[in-house]
Every structure is written in C-alpha cells, then in structure tokens.
Amino acid sequence: MRQSRRRFFPSPQRPIIMGGRSMNENLHINSTPLLRAWRKQADSAASIETTGRLLADLGRRLYVVNAGDRLALETACVDAEACEGLVPALEPQQLGDPAFLQDYGVRMAYYAGAMANGINSEDMVIALGRQGLLGFLGAGGLGRERVASALARIGAALPQGPWGVNLLHNPGDAEWEMDVVRLCIRHGVKVVEASAYMNLSPAIVYWRVAGLFRNGQGGIDIRHRIIAKVSRREVAQHFIHPAPEKMLARLVEDGVISTEQAAMAGEVPMADDITVEANSGGHTDNGVLSCAFPSIAALRDEIAEARGEAFCIRIGAAGGIGNPQAVYAAFAMGAAYVCTGSINQACMEAGTSPQVKTLLGRAKTDDVAMAPSADMFEIGARVQVLKGGTMYAMRAQKLYNLYKQYDGLEDIPAAEIASLESVIFQKSLPQVWEETRQFFKARGNPKIVEAAEAHPKKRMALVFQWYLGQSSRWAIAGEKTRAVDYQIWCGPAMGAINEWLRGSPYETVESRSVVVIADLLMRNAAYLARLSALKHAGMPVPEALYRYRPWADNFAPHLMPSSANPSLPIGTVPAA
Image (cartoon, rainbow, N blue to C red; front, side, top):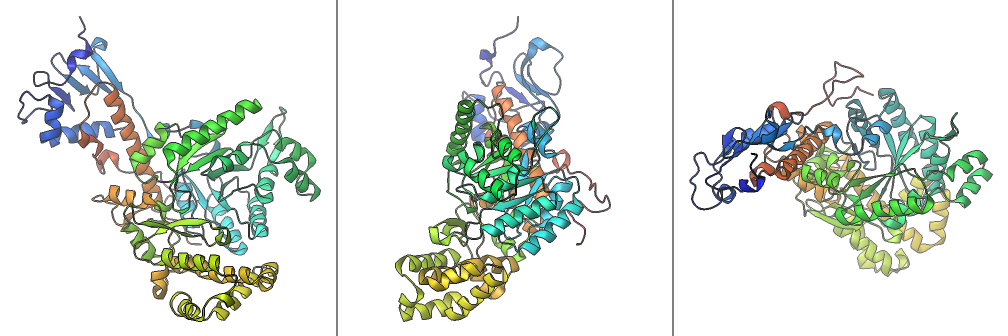
C-alpha cells in the first residue's frame, strides 16, 4: 500500500535524497529534524551542486519519488504509485503570455524599455532584434534628423523586426511628438512604447488610429500597436479606453485620419499592452510593483466588463526588474511580460559613455536620489538618478528651489547669481540664455523663445533647464570636465543586478551584453519557478538552492546565431 506523504516529514531516520545523494551524508544528525540540521550545518555542497544542475536543466522533467525510507529527486519514475510530485520542464519562452510572443514575433515575454537621448541606441535595438527580442529606440530628446537616420538604419538591419520606437510625451513641444509619429509611419514602425503620458496627446491618438483598417471578415486590423508604460490608474484608464471622441473629431477635421478610422477607433482600446512601471530609473512615482500591478490589472478588468469588450489588454511589469527573483515574482503576479530599463545602460550596446557605465557598475540598491526633470521642470516632475559619483541631484534641486522662490532671474540676489555662474553653469547666465535661444530657433520653435522673452519666469525656467538638459548629454558624451554634473537615470534595479552578477563572468560592465542579460534573467527566473515547483511537490528546499548560480555548462546563455549576418559575433552590429 502506498505510504502517506504526511509520513515524510524530514527526520534523521528518513533522510531526503536530492540529486541522487542523501542530504545527511557527512552530516552529523541528532534529534534535530533534518531540514533544520541542513540549515545549521549545510556542508553537503555536492548535493546542492547536483540538485542545482538538475533544476537548471530547464528542459528536463524531474520527479519526487518515494524511495521507501526517503524522498528522492529523480529524472525518471517507472512506478507511478511511488511518484510524490512533479517538477515540469520549463523553458524561458514558457514564462508569461504566449500571445505576446506571437503578436510581436519574439522568443520570450521580455522587452528592453527605452532610455531617452539614444541611450537605447540603434546598436542595442538591432542586437536585441537579431536575438528575437523586442527593443525600443530611445527617441526622446533626439532631433528629427537623428530619429530619421536611426529608423532607417534599424529598419534596414531588421526588415522583419522585432523592434519599436519610444514615443516620449513632450507637452512642451507637441510638434516634435507629432513629427516622430510621422517618421514612424514613414519607416514602417509597427509598435511604439508610449511613456511619460499623463493625458493622451493628438500625436499618440493619430499613431493608433492611422493604423486601423477593416479586414475582409468585418473585423479591425490594428497595424500600429502601443505598449503604454504607466504607473498610475488614472493614466492607465486613458489607454484602456478607446480614443476620446473630441480628439478624433479634431484629427478628422485636420484631414489626418478618415471618418471610417475615427469610427473604428471607438471599438478598440488605445493600447495593446500596458506596462505597469514601479520604482524605475528616470521618470517614476517610486511605486511598489506588488501594489500597482494588481490595481491596474483590476482596473483593466473593471473597464472591460463595463464596456462588454472581449478585447483583452495584456498587463506587463517593469521597474525594479534587476534580478531573477524580481522577474519570477512579476510572472507569479500574473504579468504577461516583463520589461527592463535602466540596467541596460551598463551594457556594451548602450549609447552612453564608458564613464557612465563604470559608475553604474558600482551602484548599490540605495545609491539613488530623486531630482527635478528636465523635460517637465516647470510642473515639478522628478526623475530618479544615480547618487554616487555625481552632484547632479543636489544642484538640480537647488535650481528648482530658486525657480519656485523667484519670479525671474532679475529677482535672484547678485551673490547667488555669481555662485550659479561659477559653480553650476560655469558661464554667465546671459550666455546660457543666448545658447538656449539659438537651440530653439534651430529646432524650429520660435514661439517658445517669444514666450520666454515676454515672461521672465518662463525665461528663468529655460535657463535652468539648460543645465538639466546638458547634464544628461555630458554624461552620454563622457565630458570629463563636467563629471560631477552627470545626470544618470538609475533605479534600485541597477544595484540589484550588480549584486546578482558579482562573482560571475558578467560582473564587469565591459562583459555585459543586453541580449546576454535578458537571457540570463529569464533562464534564472525559470530556474526559480522550477525550484518553487519542487517545494510545492513536498521536498524541503534549502536556502542555498535559491542562491545557486549556474553560470556555466548547460546554463550558459542560449543565443541564436545572427540571421542577418551569420559571420558576426553574437551581440554585434554592422557598421553604419
């Protein structure tokens, strides 16, 4: 008769077998239950290694077998009655929603979220795309010509995708936002990542609706996809609902969409996917993913039920995704996919300087600070930045405090002006204003200059924004004379990945590739899922197995050969 599982509580008399070896081999056993003895003495490193390798062989199904006087973890079970539990095979591509893989033509439910100013560079997007992973060009902060050339290069390298463009909401320059949408349409972009939105803009609505077409079956084909990155319910609802009727009517009047497209827009939500972003680098509300994700997922369900819609928006997770534990936790919450962000800045493909990558590689989880945002300075928006090795956060906050305190540069005390010019700006404020005027005129924005010349507080804001904007460019360029002013977007995930990679072949930033990091995060998350399955099957799981890091042999990154150019090493891109 089959013995009850209840009788297999770990004890000195009934040892647990893992990986074919008894856990109490070479272990002094007394009256303490075996699991407790393992935790206290834990000298069976060979058992940990063997079991870890079995679990890390993700495609191998494992069995928890009743061996009479013990439980054993085996690769086969010939006696069904003796099988106490199962650890199913689980490859990285099985994590998340398979529809995400199908819709975007990717091999894993994972994407690299954009970092502005081209930090998510053409090289990064191409490297990801060649490995069947989705990446987004960081178009925010780039000029129109640079965006156009980047789209042309990526499109030529990845004619079948997958790739996309980040559409960063720019309330101060709505025409730039619309021009980026026009460039995306011209270059055949299929998906944009919408970020920093508080309300919908004509540009994002135009992108969505211009890609709606009626198919032969009477349904609607959506050719312009949107992954909306949000952190609040009130923002998420804009993307869960269809486009606003008033905005659609205005676009019809302007002749950019047809009346038929406007009618179809009322039948589909604004987004295909919503990425719930928690405590991220750059723009963030410092939210907690375990609170924000269920809340926004519930909102999605409430709106869908109220509207009686069958269209289901997927919900993914971002912010704080810097180790396999975070990836696994996101999928355990029900995330359809995960998105990494600022951790990719330290990879070889990132469009930033070696100096920045070195600073990021030293970061700890608490080595971050909140600082005023360059693009939404006047409304008090803030970004999360690296604290170690730079004084940007402190200096930017000083400028914002002055902006709130005074109505114009003329009102600031002379001693304070002298300090600003010598320490922060390192040039006179009239020089800064002249550079600012020329910048906006060159970008075709004379109205911004006119408004600033008519309103002293607006002019003060633009002068202060010069420092905030230049600080990120100094960092990207590696300007050595302004190293103390580097603005480096960074969240706690950077410290988490540094800690996780410590002691591995990828500890130094010079060895990190965005595709290798993606593969390792997802494969290690699958390992943790199998470890959880082992625990649920009735096997006590030592803490050491959670810390097991199988970096070599059968757990090396599984990368595909380059389809575009098989002679290229993995992670490289051809010269422009």
